[in-house]
Length: 492
Image 1 (spheres, rainbow, N blue to C red):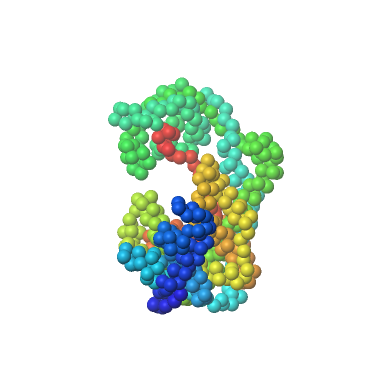
Image 2 (tube, rainbow, N blue to C red):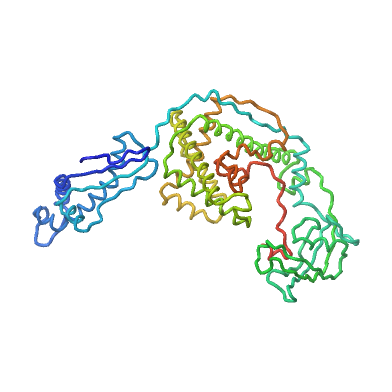
């Protein structure tokens, strides 16, 4: 076998591999000898079929198998011998000429193919002891725990019927029928619907017109669906709702006690507080780690400057670009709305893609040199977390990870990266700083990447792209209000 380097430009490599026809024929004869005693051909006793006849019957198919095996296995062997790692799957090119292909299968011509790939650049690890990060820490007050419990407890709040007029905070039980241009619309009808006035569950203007109603009242109200309402046939339309009020109930006070804990499925108020405090700590801790990680990545980005494999950058850019366009589409915005152009945005996000690829290679090298490993148990737990997020789709997810090449790597990569960050935290200078929750949860534009400053949707999409783990789950959030609607079914 002869290997000739035909291209060595930057990280790009191209090799021409030539295996003489006589070597291919020798391999084919070895295979024929192996199957000689197993084949059954009419007119010949087992093991007595002449090699020439075997070659005539099976030669081409055996040679085709040999070619496939060589093209599949040899590139890895060759790159290993050269001490190179390909950034992506090497591209293999062979002759497409049918006559030439037949000559190869008949061992009448040399097997030739090219291997094109980009190498992962050699990375000389630098001293990271000079990296300094600030770890922001929030002290959680009892008041915050109690506030969170009260928000959670809204779902368990008791209401008691009253005879007076409904006020904000009261719960009304109503039947309603919605109409547009006098015609009832799908999803615009419900019976015994319970609505807490002021909860903003229904579309703007609906709840406000129910303030002051009493049990037994019948009323018709007029509202206008928002222009961005999910149901296109209702968006921006004026509608009327015929309403019958069946009950008005006043909210009862919520007290944080064992009775409340029992309603929420826990044994005591102390246990409830313990769990809620742990949840808040976890939420703040996620954001604290995100900010620390961002500082580490920013400083590693300053330390390492090298050429990145073009194909990896292109793949990363496509992922980012797809997310950017999805975000813009969902927000109903254009690049002009974000004070940029598509051309400028592409250039900025390509820089971001290069940064992510470069940092990914750096973290990979640091982790490899430090002996960082992801255990099978850790992979299993990550898979179970995936399954937990998609109830009812467990079999499809398991089949995907079982049958899709590289799927397991998508589980391993973020685990590996976080373990490398843990390793670095033991090597760098970390200073704790107590901050308020407002400071911790404030948008950190510096962390969104200098490359993304002028790009569209930069405060969300850039942060997602650069940080390698989503910020959405990091900050503690208020309990999300129920979906706004005029009729609960149509709102969804």
